[in-house]
Length: 256
Image (tube, rainbow, N blue to C red; front, side, top):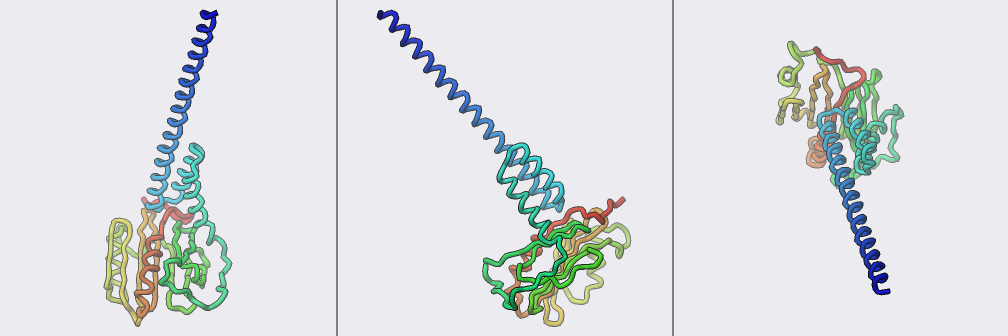
């Protein structure tokens, strides 16, 4: 009887050890899958962010869709939704009318923005949600927005670079526009992708940003606002300028 009970105890002990080993093995396997998914998610997210910074929005969308299919990541889905919201919010030509003429206090941090996406030249930019869409270009190259009191006007458009002799580079276009400015710039900036001029004319501050693209086109942001409210509008100007990203539009071509 004792021998039989010893055999029973040994069997129970063996089964318990096997169960603990199984739990440990599958737990480790599950953790490895989670770790791998996290690594894949991070790679797709980083690549998509890089594409957005370089203006290649379509490539970012493609990468995010592949990443979501591979990992089911909510983080990647959230970034994809944000990009699509920006692209779709301004595809209608309906002109928005303000509920009233009251202009919010632009110094408040809770100021919200909408997105304008231009399909023809492949660029996207944000603007304060209280701005009125004043004019949509008939040929689809840009749009004009403004505050209801006219104190701030924002113009954005794309165009072919036809004014420069030689290669349509940042340096050549920068020198060309510098010679034809109707104001003396008080601020200038230039890098390998875009350049900026800013100055004062007739009581207004002018801020213009030119993004030079490899397909032979440029995307332009032009802001005009009251010099007496410059400090109030500084944050808005910075936000708008930084929000402008570019990609490939349906009317772009590959430069030889």
